[in-house]
Amino acid sequence: MTAHIIDGKAFAANVRERVKGHVTRMVEEHGLRPGLAVVLVGEDPASQVYVRNKGKQTAECGMASFEHKLPADTDEATLLALVNQLNEDATVHGILVQLPLPKHLNSDLVINTIAPEKDVDGFHVVNVGRLGAGLKSMVPCTPLGSLMMLKDYHGDLSGKNAVIIGRSNIVGKPMAQLLLGANATPTIAHSRTANLEDVVRAADIVVAAVGRPEMVTGDWIKPGATVIDVGINRVPAPEKGEGKHKIVGDVHFESAVKVAGAITPVPGGVGPMTIACLLANTVTAASRAAGLPEPSDLTV
Ligand code: GUN
Image (cartoon, rainbow, N blue to C red; front, side):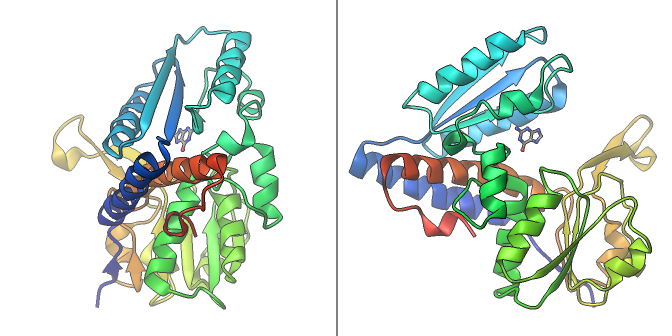
């Protein structure tokens, strides 16, 4: 027996189709075109790739896409002025400032300057607090996409033991809040957790978000468990030729797939869902801004 492979690429394409349908309706019936502004400071190559993909997919869904590229030595006042200008711009419903920012800029200050209702990353402290309090918020994209896949596969998550490996503000902590909201019982494990393997072995659902290539092996997984691999790690791949690299997750796929009940691959699992959920959040933000009903098929 090998695990069911959860196809994040196909799932993300399906989410984007739904987004496109909502955008078409909003434009036709309300003259409202959802708009997403992305701010990139500097020339980090990985960030440039992300931003290009975001711009392309935003436009493909019929949304307005605004890109602001600033030089790496941009000062804080200039960046904050741009964020404030986007906050005021009624054609912009979602604002994303690409992270990491160059070191001389205070990321917390920049993120918390974004109007919370336009914070499609869900990183603003107001959204973090609202999510924790069970109030309407913007939900971080990677956990949102992960929960969508879990709910699609399992239906009800009530009574499930979920272990999240990694306590980041971007994935681990919000993932725990979402799982709690879905009536699962989440545990957040991390690098200092005692007997990590045993903790993971008790889980019906494992969410790996530590950033350590192939750390979680098949013998850590409870037979039949569902494994969501959030890791994106670039590692040398000498088998592909000298100097070549490949992308692997935080889970050792070949061993885990023999034990798990279902598993997301890397690439092609959680990754594609993240941008799809960013588009979904932008439609949600635009709907809220216009006082329209929120599309229930773009959230969890
Ligand atoms: N850098 C890598 N992933 C992300 C993301 O989801 N949001 C932002 N703002 N920056 C990122």
